[in-house]
Length: 307
Image (cartoon, rainbow, N blue to C red; front, side, top):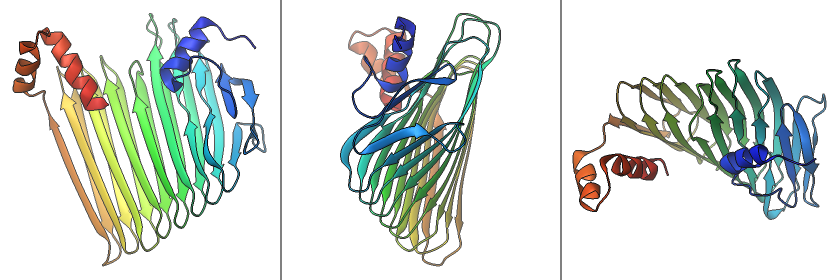
């Protein structure tokens, strides 16, 4: 299928793609898979009931990437997909997901992505998911990702979850189970503007000895937007966990941060910290002294903060 310039622009925004990649790929456009390829080590196909994808990365695979972006350009489309990703034992791979919505209508466009990610024993996964919305009319752009993660013994996963801009409403739910000596790092970056609303709800269970988890959130709220960040670490064995939330509040926006730690074993070491504030005046002055306007200085600070 020939993708339009708009399709490619959206793919570039959410998956950094300038062309259809070689190797394992699935591009979902307006509720249907329009491009799908497997590779020798990565199988990409429908799940058992046809409601989404099953991606299986063979044991021992190294330095390979699978792209699974979603694009919605059809006004008023309500899209839901169920995807399962299985990273085989001792594999080392990257999954690049993400969803972009272009909505130039008054109707609401919505994508619900329900993902299960299983990282088998000894495997390593890098997972990147970007969300982006755009449109010239009042129709909402809604994205609700829901992710269930299992990190098996001795495995590790790093998940980068980014909302660039243009998403009116989002509820982001992540539940993770980490087994013995497994490690999970979640990096979340969110930008809200206007009257947008964003809710993040992360719960991580560290179930085996030596398990570890880290949640790092960076958020910027502008205009009249609202953000709610909730992150809970549950230590059920000898483990280490940390939650950190830093946010910049601007204009009339509101941010609520609710970090939670729950220790169920005497050997669990859990910590959290949260900070919400405005842009430091000395940062603005320094950048403006270098020749930037005030708006350029603000943009530079926010870009660096969310990087």
